Length: 246
Image 1 (cartoon, rainbow, N blue to C red):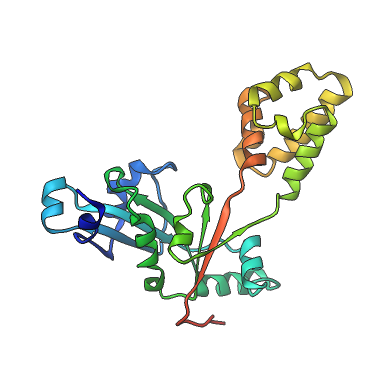
Image 2: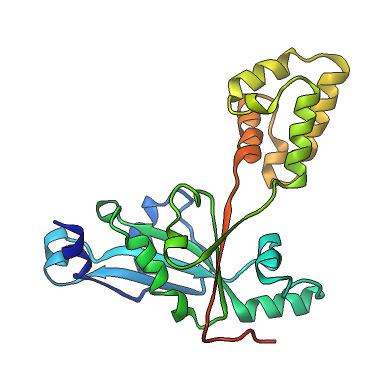
């Protein structure tokens, strides 16, 4: 079937947790989605539904936003910054929703359905701002195609510090792409250098929950390196018909 004929037999409608559950297994994150602010589904109709034996082809999940986000402050000119916790949380909750999941059933990927699902539901949330953080945003920028604006932040200070610490013990930036090589070099360190880098790594991992308890080894090194190279992309969309609520 050609992509153009498929799209005519798909419609975006308000969905529910059942729509998410049907497609959750195709997402790279854990299945549990947790509390959500809204779900919309891309559903097959007519002949397509009968031929493919599917009801839900795609799903998008909106959730409440986190209270603080550096890139949100940059994108909005600091509109949500400088308030106490209670006031700030109330302001963010009134005005912002975050896209938590966008899933397309594998047989229907590659024909622009993810961007369609985003673009057709942004205004349906009824708030002034929609945001999303995409781990793979630069690889498949469907949020941008849907009309959202992309922001890429600077390398976090803790990551820059970790890179500098590794450089001080002889592990340069160009070597950070190979966990095995980095681990071999770490294992060769002795005395003050070994103690120094172990202290730096443990301090770095304090930012990552249970990961701070990881034992030294290749798995821990691979995790640290993944955080040094990953640059999530922040996307934002301003609803032209809704003003910010105080």
